[in-house]
Image (cartoon, rainbow, N blue to C red; front, side, top):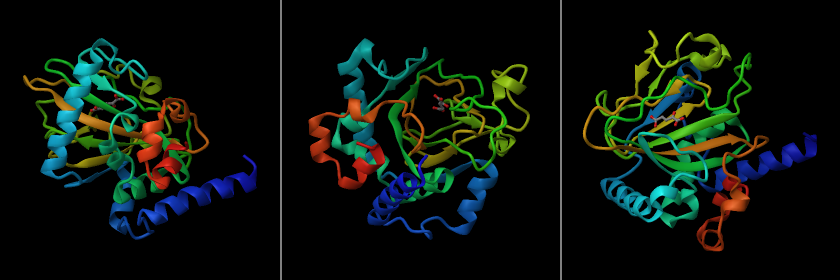
Length: 262
Ligand SMILES: O=C(O)CCC(=O)C(=O)O
């Protein structure tokens, strides 16, 4: 990439972060080193009870409205209910792409970044088990060359029983994708942990950390939203310029438009 363009683009995201109140001190030294070492970082109490109720209720309405077409713009997955392009569907979802602490963590991993897509994923009763994966298949990636990073917004308590995300701490440092080194990505990994955390938490997951959804063995859905970011030089999962409507362009802040690259 031409140096002048790179510096200009980096200034744009840096300016947007500054006006959202993100500084080098937004994350503590301990938080940065935990994220660097383990490839994930939870933040508790990012959503209030009222916000949780509002998000759950709006996603429920959207699921009904979209029916069989839900999630089609990006990804369908058996045993789950997915919705996508949420930024475009209600002003309430802007919170998920503009929270200073979350953005500070994404910036720490990716440097110059943009939103790749904002989706919800509910593991339905009996569904949700995935193979360990990274979100950008690669091999021999240098630890400083991260391209994608996720923020999982927990709308329900994530428990061992209801399909809490599993991940292998530190696996982002191997530079490898699990499908190229593991015999079977579906089985439990000896070093995996499960992200057991309460609703309202946001978990940053460096998407090069081996991770996966687990099976929901309860009779209620396990709901979360994925604010998925990519480095600014990467292709978005959902082309935001093509997907955004005029209503959203009217309600989004200038900072959010920089984050979306629209
Ligand atoms: O929702 C989860 O627990 C993780 C899902 C995931 O990793 C994915 O869909 O790629």
